[in-house]
Length: 418
Image 1 (tube, rainbow, N blue to C red):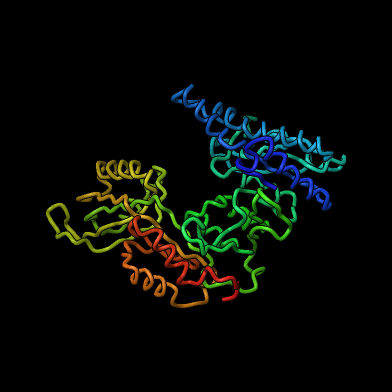
Image 2: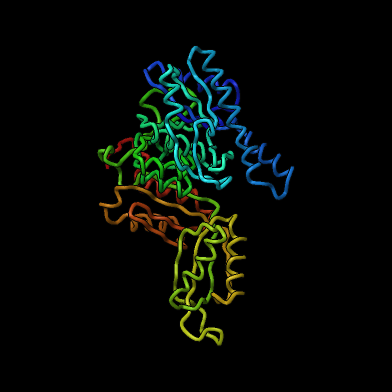
């Protein structure tokens, strides 16, 4: 069971979460609980580090920011003990959660079972583990980066062969799209790993991408549900293998990412290796490139271009434009690429339709494009995969596009059958 920051924001919410843990103990389970820092605490700790040092030691950064989860784990264990549940807290190094030494962005190496299993054998029913943290080969505290607690929970579920992994959050499941965009959005009872992975990577904030990747790799059954209100074993949304889903709609959900940017390199030399020369430096600069389109340049040849030329367009998050621009200017200065102009459009958003049913149904793209055209929404860039179609559009049309596609693919209907 994993509880996020809003679920343990204060002592009352910790008590509420403890009641849900106690309910699982009464059902006969031993429970591993992963907790986040109390809401807002991690940001406060990061702020203290930044005010203390402009060029901080990453090892000390991890030592500071990991402390938020330690506090929650201790408080949760105390609360459970007061309720008569045998529980104890564990910090990452005590388990131990062995990770790489990449401070601030560590990856799991192993989670040995011996220490926790020994406590369960002694009669303890609950292990409350501080999420988001581990220990490096050198014995230093590490943190796992964004979504670290979700990923910790899935990793423990895999290591201990858990029946399932419950992710408690401030929403009651995975919806066909953001209910704030359309009131017709419907909670899904089940969704496949692949669909959830696409939705998470395309902008849905319910689960972090790394946690879904791990769940899919180790076949961990994930359940997303609300920590507020009553819940039972049928609550929330189950993320599982597609074989568990009898029949699903062609499209399961609509995802969107509001803060996208479109960058075009005008009149690039059209030669072998040009794509590597462009996207290699972008990768080294940490720019997350998504959609890529190469097309014949509208500009005529000039003396600067001895052969064929092309325009190269790609999308990336708005906050990475500066890095992308610098990487391209440095590559041009080094002579590895040449272009006439770098054009940036920051007023675009990405909208995507996702569904495993698209594998066996033709015409989804045509239906999507026609419905957007009927609403006067112009498509700037298109990207597809086996179960996803994404388009880049003007940001002002994002709500209209999401609502239109949600209606087009009948996602508001209560029936799960296609």
